Structure formats: structure tokens, C-alpha cells
Amino acid sequence: MRFPENDFHKHPCFNPEAKGKYGRVHLPVAPQCNIKCNFCDRKYDCVNESRPGVTSTVLNPAQAGIYIDKVLEIEPRITVAGIAGPGDPFANGTETMATLRQIKRQHPEIILCLSSNGLAIEPYIAELAELKVSHVTITVCALDPEIGKNIYSWIRVGKIIYRGRKAAEILLSRQLSAIGKLKQHNITVKVNCIIIPGINDHHAEDVAKKMQAIGVDLFNCMAMFPNVNTPFAGIIQPGSKMMEELRTACEKYLPQMRHCTRCRADAVGLLDADRTEEFRSCLNTCSTLPGMPSKQRLHVAVASREGVLVNLHLGEARHFYIWEKTSTGFRQVEKRKAPQPGDGLQRWHRLAVILGDCRAVLSSGAGQTPCDVLTKSGIRTITAAGLIEEGLPAVYGDYETKQLRGRKHSFTKSICSGSGGGCL
Image (cartoon, rainbow, N blue to C red; front, side, top):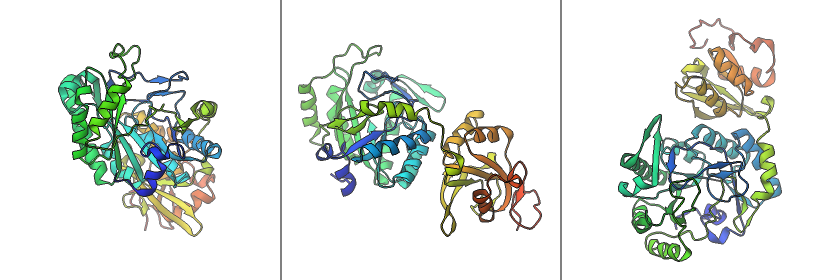
């Protein structure tokens, strides 16, 4: 196996020898899905089932940060934080990336892990690598679109719904491309193949062979779990004999995961000693908590062309430069993508999630609607101009002063021309 030594030994899903020593916590921050599988029934607030797609509640990124702190206080053997639903992480890309950033800041030592259908992950892969997300699982159930069209009712790309063979072709193309890009970024990839008797059981070995060819590290034949009120409800779950035969056949090409427990989207604990039920009350309590108070947030976002001046209107910014205060001054820590224009009010709600760790955002101008949305999320919108580093002391040290409220504030001694270019 081609795993980084430390990550491999501490990831219980990728190493069966670790399952009794190290644990995982799944953060249910991704409720939406962009495909409809004929075997899937995603359930919320469900306490009676243990399978993928089920959670007792959904968290936002700030709540996830509070929850993982509480989990690690009680269960220090947790080494992996994963996002596996209850929908798909990248049908909820804004929330997923905000959660990963938060966990990485709070617990840089923890292994970050994701499980996705692969349809919409590719635009995020470079940033996943920057965040050191080391393990990603992609579910690939068919290489032949004639088989795939029977597995998926539909897929959604943007606002367009595809069905039948076309849906299967698009999904497969994106899955293969995403796996290739993940491997280019040295991310360990596991492929889950859901075994559906009479649909794709004869096809699993072909999938494993192809996955070997494109660099996948681990293969997991998963028995389909029949769900009431789904098209495959009448298909009997494959038995242990069938599954063992398929794993043995697929093992000619890739190492097999034989210890999968088909975890819930809110699973927590060791695979051998699951504590999901025990932590349910904590999870539900965290889901009701407000976001982090603004003065406890470490960062400030800036709308800037080059990262030196405050010189872009909030709506013009395609990226935000993120700054933090240090013992010796201020430093820029990252450049964070803004949500794409369009979708009206939803754009600003997505921005509030993206900047959820920021106490303020500096820009050369902002409309009333984004200001209202960001303010309700605890993010102050400050209209200003000039050098970023000259303005940050006021934001951190005198955050509530009237001079930064409701009007353009120049950080320099010169008169601002109003052009948004900054005053030098």
C-alpha cells in the first residue's frame, strides 16, 4: 500500500490493525446530495438505524468546531475527522470547506478525511491538498453506463438534472477525472463499490481492475443495505459468501477493506467500540448553539486585488485575503475563494459560511443586503480604503469604535479619491 506512514497507521478505515486503537468522528455538515441512488434513503433525526446517509441532526461549520472539541475531550483516541454526509460533501461545498478549515486550525494534528460520490469534488481538490486532507473515498458502482443507468435515478450538475445513460456517463467521467487529480495531489484514495445483486455484482471485478489502473490505493466492496421506499427495496442484501468471493476476486487488483462497518454520517468512536449513541445528546446540543462570538474569531477578511490594499467592493471580490493577529504584528494566512455571483441572497449566506471564522470583512464598499446577512452571522462589514496592515490594529484593538461604523474610513493620512484604489 502506498500510504503516508503516520496517516496509514492512525486511520482505522484504511488500516484494520488500527481499528481497535484509533477512532473517527464524522461531522454531519452536508445535508444536500447531487445524485439519487436507487438504494439510498437519507434520513435525518434517525436514531434507530446505523448505515450511511443517516444522522440524528445536522451541524453548521461553527457547531462542528464546538462538537469536535467536546468529542476529543472525552475520547482522545480519535485521530480522524471525516465528512461523509448525510448527503454529499460537495453538494455542500461551502459548508464542507469551511468545516475543514476550522478543524485544521483547531486540531492541526488530526487526519482529515472525506467520502464523496465524486460528481462535484474536482474544483475543490487543490484546496483539499492545501488543507492536507489526506484520505478521500469515492463511491464508484459501475464503469458501464448501461449498468450505471440502473443504479442512479438522476444526477444534478449545477441546476441541470440528467437521467438514464447520460447521467451515468457524466458521473463516471467526473469520478475518473477526480480520482486522477486526487492522486496527482498525493491524496490517498479508497473506492467504495456498492454491491447490488442482479445489477452490478458481476461487474465489481472490472471496477477494481480499472481503479488499479488509475492509481487507487484501497478497494471496498460494500453490501447494499436494502431500504424501504427505494427502487431497490425488494433486492435482497448480498450474503457474506457472495461478498467474500467478490473481495477475493477484486483482491487480484487492489487491497480490500474487509472491516467496513457502514458508518452513519454522525458516527463517532472506534470501529470496534462505537460511541455514536453515547455522543448523540452532545451532538444534538451542539446543533442548537449559536456561532462563535465575533471577538473570539481570530481572522479578518479583506476584499483586495493584490493583498496589500483594501480596494475592492464586496461584490467584486472573487477571493478574500485572510489575516490574523500574531505576537509580532499581523500576517496573511490564506487566500479564500468567494462564492460565485448569482443566486441572489444565497450568495451572501454562502459568504457568511466561508468567512465564519472572521470577526470582520474589509472592503471598499458593500450593499445593504450582504451587510445585513454578514452582521447577523457575527461578521462586521467595514467600508474602508488604504493599506490593509494600517487598518488591522483598529479592527482588532478598537473594533467597536464609531469611526469604523457605517462610513468609509481611510487608513492613511491622504484623502481618498473614492476610486477604490487606495490612498498612497
